[in-house]
Length: 415
Image: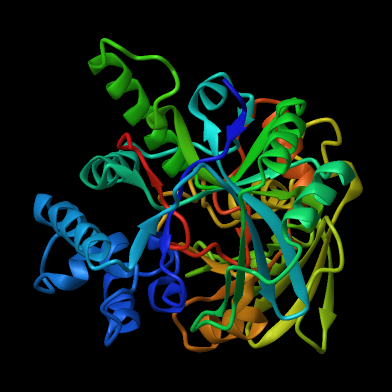
């Protein structure tokens, strides 16, 4: 089996991509999705967040929600809004956000290579979230939410993708959040074969975002393989929908922390405790860390710059040397008593796209007491953790721009 392969994608018919394009299912709650889809009958949110078409008190994991997703999916196909390509294709996908541009490949990736860890992971998954995606895939008989993958930047692969992006794009839209999405359909068989061969030569791919989507695809594949006495390995369920970017083009934002209290300490006691593992320097301006091992702290209406002591950085441990680990192991846990940030209700996480103002507002409102600004985790560190077979701490990375749902879907049904 190839690491990746081309597929006959289900896409919005010409001129309708702007009507269909929607944010990923997991970045909006139900109320936000209902608002974003208002007046947009073909928004993909009617498929990815189908509870918006049911009474507001509907449990988003109820059976009728998945049935509504299937109904909406079928309706959009019957009305000719979503149409399947006639032949297997690759799709070149370019994202624009401000001055940032990244160009990647929409393909389907091998479940077998995911299971064998050739497609490498760096997060734990939750069974309830996997169950949700399994039910969604089974209801639609399709994968509609792409997994964000990365490959180690390769000039030859980059050149092939640029060749596929020559000429006018098949899709060129700006979504309602200001993110630009361009898509080129690659039908040339020679280019398809060259792209497949170059990826097959790669030792690994890396999951950047979408661990639950890939895990659920693996579960669906295992179940369908078990139920199929004529299983060949070529069935669509053996592959999962992916968008693959060169790692050097991917933008990771800081994923900042806010905490509700000082764990019973006075302000002076807290500052004294912080000053032991960190050099603390007051700042007249908000602190956006300039590099690893540096942190900003907002407390009592003032900003401080924190630099951790060099001897506290474990150089040879790819997880423990991450900034999120340094903050957790030297401050959040021993000083603030936050031992399990996954479950502790005293801590919350703020994506860096909201800016440092977002941190200040959470503290100034009285909702939180202290905020910490972080330096973004580099892609090289993410890959080092994945290569070591380790797991990153929760909320270590925040990728922007987000992939759109609805531009290309992968049907699991046979043509």
